[in-house]
Amino acid sequence: MGLENDIYKTLVHSSGEVLFKDRNSKFYGYAFPVENESEIKNQLESIKKRHHSARHYCYAWQLGVNNPAYRVNDDGEPSNSAGMPIYGQIQSFGITNALLVVVRYFGGIKLGVGGLINAYKTTAQMTLANAQIVERTINIDFKISFEYEHMDKVMRIIKEKALEIKSQKMEMNGEIIIAIRKKNATDILNTFTSLYPVIIEKV
Image (cartoon, rainbow, N blue to C red; front, side, top):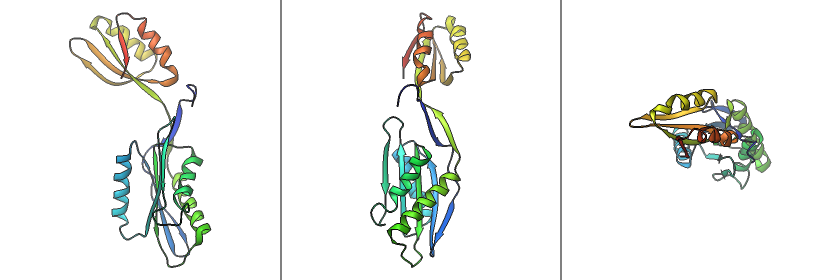
């Protein structure tokens, strides 16, 4: 992913529940925005509590942007009949930092591998179609340190460039942490470094 392509898609918030039925089996789909594996673990645990009598909890997730990590889990279904079709929809919708879970209640009639692939894929597709997806930019955080006399200049650049302030600390000197969109980073760094004696460094 080049510097010009610094946009990714993810979920705004957890999706609502969707239900797909096939020959008495019920498939419940859920999607969650996640930032790390501990959040994934917590969401999976809450789904298992909610559906404690279900037969299978199949899922796929993807984290990261440039070299994303992903995992799929068939949870006892035939190999590649659940996790991969779910992951295929994460790829199809082009999202990352997302967990997609499909919970199955077995209805007594076997669906066969083709039927399972279709059911998990369809439930995953319905779940993401029901979710709110947003485009976000890849941002890099920088810390700006400066003496009070330069505060107006610093704040003016932040305002002009519409930079996001993550935190600020005003003690003996000023210290502000800002988020800069990746592709604009060099330009903004140059603007600040021309303001001697302001110090800007990557967090």
